[in-house]
Image (cartoon, rainbow, N blue to C red; front, side):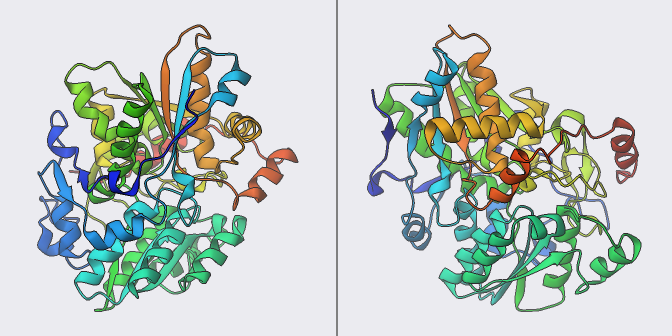
Length: 447
C-alpha cells in the first residue's frame, strides 16, 4: 500500500486554474463602495497591482505561473499527498482517507502559495512596501516570507486576540523582517476610533483589514495584500488541487468526498476548484466546507453584497456574510474568524455544489489530537475542522469504502498554547446567538 505520493519538481503545475468561467451562474462583480456600481480595475489599482487585478477579473480558465514564482514554490512544492492509514485503523473504517499536506511550507501553511505570487506581481510594478492583516498569523507569516524574497517592506496588522495568543507567529514575521502590530491600533484613524469605543475589544479581521487598507492608501509606495477571499487568491491556491489530481491518479483513486476548513475560503477552494469541471460533467463528488459554530458564515450568514471591513472602505463583494461589523468570539482557530466568505465559495454554496457544515471547537481539537497520535503531525486549530469533517464522513458508515480527500492546510507547532488550554479544560464550545447575527446582518448595505 502506498503511504505517500510526492511528485517530481518537473511535474509541478505550471499554470493556475481559474474556476470562475466554469461556475454555473457565475460570480457577481465587485461594487464601488461609493457609487454601488460595478467596479473597474482603475479604482482598485490604488491598492492592488494591475497584474493581480487582471487575474481578479480574468475569464481565462488557465493562467501561466511566472518562472520566478515557480522557483520559490519549489522550496516546498510539490507538497505530499498522504494516505492516513493509521487514522483509518483507529476509526475502524473501510473508508480511505487522503490528505494534501500543505504544512510543509516554510511557514507551515498553504498561505505561502498566494503570498509568493502577490509579492512577485507587486515587485514587478515597483511597489516598495505592502500592508496586510492576519488572523491566526499564518497569512502574515507567509507574506513576511514572500516579501523577504523580493526585497519589499511588510507591515502586518494582527488581530489582537491572536497577537496575544500566538507570540511565535510574531517571531516568525519578525525573523523575515516584517513589522507586526496588534489591531485595533493607535496607528490609524480606524483603529483609534474603535479603541475609543471598545477599548477591550479582541479585534477582528474586518478591523485589521480596515487598518491595513487605510495605511496603504496614505502612501504612494505602498499596496495592500489580502490572504483569502478574493478571486486571485483562490486562483493561486488552485495549485493544491491540481497537484492532488495528479497524485490521486498515481494512487489509482478518485475522491468521493473533498473536505476543507472555511474561513475566507482559500484553502478549501484551492483543493476543491480543480475538481469542479469533473463534477459539472457528471462525476459524483461531494464537497464539504467545515466552519466554526462561533463564526457560521455559510450556515447562518446571508448571501448579499457586503463590505470586507469594518470601516466600509473595501469593494462590496457578493458573498455569504454575517455583517461587516460582526466581531466573533476569540476561538483559537483564528484563521476562521471572518465575517465573509469568498465570492467563489459562496457561489459554490449558492449552486448547491458545496455543503457547509458548522463544527464546535472541542470536537475539532479532539479530532486534531487523534490525528496527531495516529498520523504523527500536530494540526493547526483551523485544520482540525477539516480533520473533524473527514472523521465524520469516514464514520458515517464504517463499511462504506468511500475515498475521502481533505486539505491539511497547516501544522499546529506554533499553536501549542491553544492545545495547552484545551488540555486544561479552558476552551469552550460557542454557538453564536441567532439574535446577535440578525442584529449584525441588519446593518448590511442597501443595494
